[in-house]
Amino acid sequence: MFSESIVTTELSLVSNSNSSVYFISLSTNDIQLTTAVIEETTSNSTGLWYNRPMFSPCALWNPNATTFADQSTLGPYTHGVFIDTYNTLYAGSWWNSLVKVWPNGSSTATRTIQAGLYQPYSLFVAMNGDVYIGNGGSNGQVDKWISNATIGTGVMNISAPCCGLFIDTNNTLYCSLSNLNKVLKVDLTSVSSTQVMIAGNGSNGSTSSLLNSPFGIYVDTDFTLYVADSNNHRIQRFGFGELNATTVAGATAPGTITLNYPTGIVLDGNGYLFIMDTGSYRIVASSSAGFRCVTGCSGSSGSTADKLYNARYMAFDTYGNMFVSDDDNGRIQKFYLQSNSCSVTTVQSYTTAIVQSATQIWRKLNIGGGGSSGEVWNGWSHVKSKDNFRGCGNNIGMTLQKNDMICTYRASYYHPSFDIVKLNGKSGGGSFSYDRTKSKEEVYNAFVEFIEKQIAAQTE
Picture 1 (cartoon, rainbow, N blue to C red):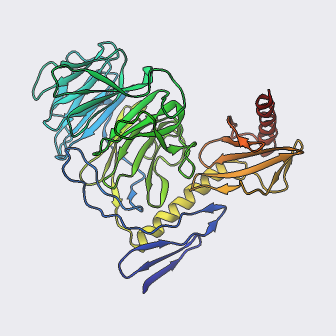
Picture 2 (cartoon, rainbow, N blue to C red):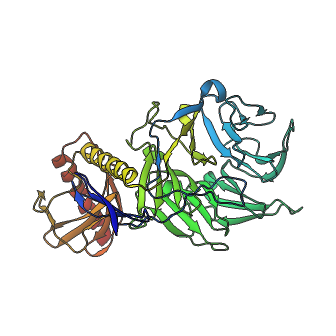
Picture 3 (cartoon, one colour):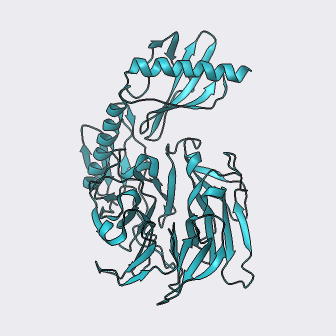
């Protein structure tokens, strides 16, 4: 039996006697919320030396972060953050060419790793406490620093910076070479140190086997590799031993979320994604309720407590707090976990925040969230179509038609862009970006001109 019901101006929320929460799908200002039953636990994933807390789909973080370390500590440009299960925090500085270490509960770093480093891009800590640093900008190697060492030793020779490092449970080191469009791995227990290319082939591309500026990487306990394929605006998942990936987030993965130069990815204890959507200055996450923004949700950069500026790396502590390497602000930001329960009160606050955030984004677009049926732009009319759709909280699909020409496109909630889905019944391509300061008429007149050029190119 349902024990409690709340009706807000946005939607109805109902909980039953075992505290499961049911989202009732209602249209609110053209925003369709996802129907889901919340079942995840909230304990921490065990057996690992880095943190993978388990979050409910309505977990909330304080939108205003506290600064854990600023430029006076790390310098203008940070790069990389790691937290072990003792809550020891490691953070890197690209500008000052160093890595600092803070023990649990301390606001003062007790170790500085610096000798021989030059503009390090990434770091990861092994189970035994050895620190691995991508020292490849000029030095051409990944260095290992054992406890209390004053100089590192090279463990992997590379010809470009490692923008992402990871060590799996088999003690295999992974390195993403963004400039070379590939991911390499090396067995740290082997004396040969033979490098194996496991994703991409060195050429940029957007097919399932290619990458374009891969940045952050994450390896699950089953050795599935996740890659933030930055310039393809997607997250790729490579099964163990597979060279062809599945897109699990991005514009080309229907029902997920539109990304803008993602650079980092972390999994929680339930296997859900937390993505550094760097080009949109935010962090997004997945759950059984779909994708949502969890911090930096204004979509604009800045240096205030609620904003990020080209943040590329993140890590969780054992409490579920989120530490973010806010790179171009030169700081490490801590977003406190406010709630990890799915009480009706929490869900009401959570869903109201989603609606308010989405509504603000719609207003900022200044185009009414796509077109309306009957509108005409230079002979092109918005029409009803079976191809029209409403996405999972981040986009809608609309159809424009002029005589025998027809185009289905996706209008993003978060970005000033339209992505063509179909042209004259065929899979389309191309993305049209617009200026948010322009009027709806100016935007659509330019967009239909863009469509006609795409159709002309299709028929050549």
